[in-house]
Length: 223
Image 1 (cartoon, rainbow, N blue to C red):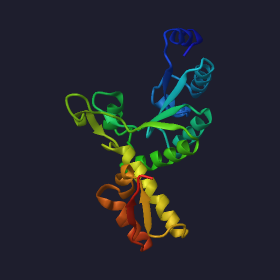
Image 2: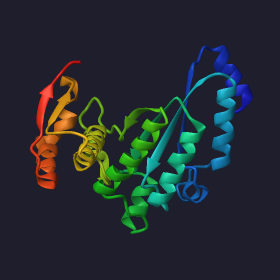
Image 3: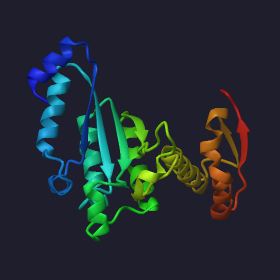
Image 4: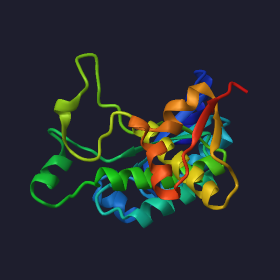
């Protein structure tokens, strides 16, 4: 991301630049053969900002050699860089890739779906509180020929990852407010948020009843 490149893009009318950062942990970047170091990413972000572009950063959890702590530290650092938006994807093992060979040889173990959801939840909290938009969560492997499932060898793929992450965040938030006696048993929600609040198969409603003993009544309210 040289100044010459940025100047050319600026003159061509480009307004937004997205970078495949993935991690700001040099050890993880080396194991993932990313071909760049964390400091190069930080410097590139500063140059992009100086030229006045909107900045989007892509992050991944579950990369080779990446612990949950490493991912969380990357999320915290990216929040300080304060891009305009981020995209977050758990690492998937796809066919005919070097990662597939590592997986087949036992040298790489993908995250479980639960671990991936947990890490995505933590990153969602950080970026939401920092006022950074989350443009996408999860990898789209579908194409015009189908859902893309034939490309997947292993890994925490979910067809609606962001919905699941947001639904669980709502579930935890409401439970905590019930415990702190900050709300009764009536919850007003906008109609467009019903599926996130209720959860797949109304599992959030069931969860609140089982963990707090309170049956939550939902009231749809466009206000």
